Structure formats: C-alpha cells, structure tokens
Image 1 (cartoon, rainbow, N blue to C red):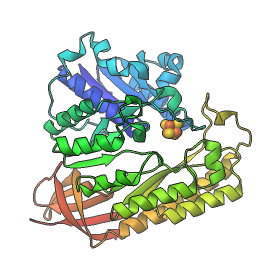
Image 2 (image 1 turned 90 degrees about the vertical axis):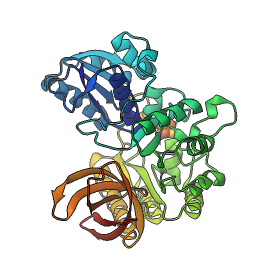
Image 3 (image 1 turned 180 degrees about the vertical axis):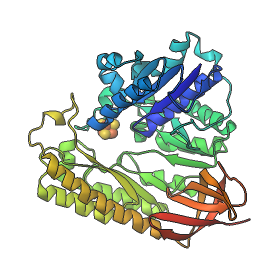
Length: 426
Ligand code: SF4
C-alpha cells in the first residue's frame, strides 16, 4: 500500500505519526508525499483549540478531494468527536487515542511483533514532514486539571513509556540515521510518576545519555513545575540542546489561578533563573493564552509585562477558545473577540521583539547546526538550511550537501529575520 501520513498539533502527535509510518514501512508498505493516489491516508488530529479541530476536519476533506481511497482518523479531535469524524467523506475508520498503539496491527490484521522488531532506514516523512529530527514519545496523558485543557480529556491519565522502551526507540532511530531526538509527551515532566519506583524524567534523560550515542537531545515541552535544580545539571552533557520550552500561558497570578496552573509568576521566574544559571545561552520558549475568561486589562497588562521581563527566545500566542467539557468553558466573563485579537497582536509583538533580540545576540558566536534541507547548488556551494542547538533557523553554504549532518557554524549576520552562518572547517 502507498500510505500518506499527516498530523497537526503538538510534537507528541508528530512523534506518534513518525512511529506509525515507521511501523508501516517495516511491514513492507511505502510512504507517499501526497494524499493524491494514496491507498490509505492516516491523519493524527488535534483538538487543542477550535481552530485545530477545524483544521483536522479540513485536512480530512482535502485528502478525500485529492483522491485518497481510504482515510483513517486518530488523535485528540477524532477521539473527542468520533461520530462526526466518521461522517466525514472517505473516512473508513476512527481510531481513538486509547487504541492508537494497536492501530497498525488492527489495520493490517497482523500481530505487532511481526513488523516491530527491525530498524528501518530513517527517512523524513515526505511532503510537509521534512524534518531530520526524530520525535520520541516518552509519555502520554496528564493528571493535571488545567481548566482550559481538552488534551487531558482526550488523552486520559498520565502514562510513562518504560525507560527501556524509550531507549530501544532511540536506538532504532539512531540506527536509521537520526542525529537528534526530541523527547515528547503531553506532560513530559511527570514522566515516572505512574511507575511508582521513584524515577523522574531526569533519570530517563540520563539513561538516554549514558546508554545511547545520540548526538543531540532536545525536550519538547516541559510544564514549569516538578523540576529541581539537579534537573538542569543534565546540561553539563553537551549533547543536551540549550533550549527549553516552558509553557507559561499567562503572566498574571490571578489568571494562572483561574487556569488551574501549578505555578505563579514568582515561581516561574525562580525556575527560569535556575535554568539560566545552569545552561549558558539558554533559548527559552513558551506558549501564551490571551483572552482567557475574565482576563481584564490590568491582568493582561501584568501578563504582557511578565512576558517582556522573561525575554523569551520565541513563543506561540493562542487566543482562548472554549473547548467543550473543560471547566473554563463554563466560566462567565468571555473576552470579546476583538479585544482578544488586539491582545494577541500586542503579545506577539513583545515575543517577536525578544526573539529577534535573542537571535541577534548569537551573531559572532558559534552554534551547532543540524542541516535539515537544501535549496540548491550555485557557485558558492550548497545552500543549506538547518536548526541550531539553541533552536534558531540558520542558513549557510557548504561545499557538499550536508543534509542530516551537524556542523559547527559561526553566525555572521542577522538580517530580515534570517541568520547566516559559516561552517567552521575542522
Ligand atoms: S499540564 Fe495542563 S495544559 Fe498540560 S496537558 Fe496537563 S492539563 Fe493540559
């Protein structure tokens, strides 16, 4: 079968779709870069915002109109709205999150062990998924009760992928040629809690560093709590990327309380100080929600000021959208769409300023770049584009195509939002 894979939303969805693609490849099927003419299309859907749910439906319709013979929907939106998902044209099956790990064996009607044993050459998923980094799922679900969050409803309680299984997955992608892993989970920081053996995310990462030869380890997103000073000692190993994503959601203590977050601006600030003390030149990124119910001008102002103070290296801003079944959807005091739009623009502006400042600060420094694509060859060499260890997009020329190689690069300029670097020949 020719199968087209697509996913939207978080890195966990990305990790899962890569794992599904890899399992189908091992079972002898091929992966195609477009839904056109595909025998099967598998889409990992998302429900984190109303827009993500709408995109999920749209992707399914697009696949149908492109001529996909059969469509299978999985992921959070399909889990929350299975009847609606099944009603979309061309959808032959909905696989809920709880059944996702058996999706391949269910569809192929084969035992999983028949195709899950051997590594396959690691190829980026064709089409939009041209990343060289391997997303590794280490955790699923969440035991927190953030009042806006539909993900925890769609994904259920927190479950850790056992350490040896994560190590095995890292080894498989290593044998397939991956240079960087992105450790992913819904609530990655809670890894180990359900195992009841006293292990913590720190132990999992240490084991990956000790037992595998992976060249770079990046963490997807870590909730800004449950972490101690010793966690950041992991970065004494230079294979740990100096990049952490701590979702803040709001810089107002009152809004954070209404959101049910386990942190306050003061605690967040203290954690960031610990991280920045331990990790030189740390790229700190975040997520922010604006227009949460009852967010008034004063609270938004506090949030804006706090975000300015944190000097993030980047981040995403979401306008709050009520998700059915969440506690926040029942709150009164909806913020008008126009006001939320205005706040979103202000917040994006602050984040863009600090992101540019961070990027500009790397000019003259050396970073390690994993080259992810090339836009061709000219008299200066191969035009390469990649991602630095501190999560910056960098372009440069190389004498040969360096796709999926890591080079030490001196950043020489930052113009029009673009970092240019020169490879340091060793
Ligand atoms: S920590 Fe909060 S936002 Fe994150 S998955 Fe859990 S409930 Fe949702």
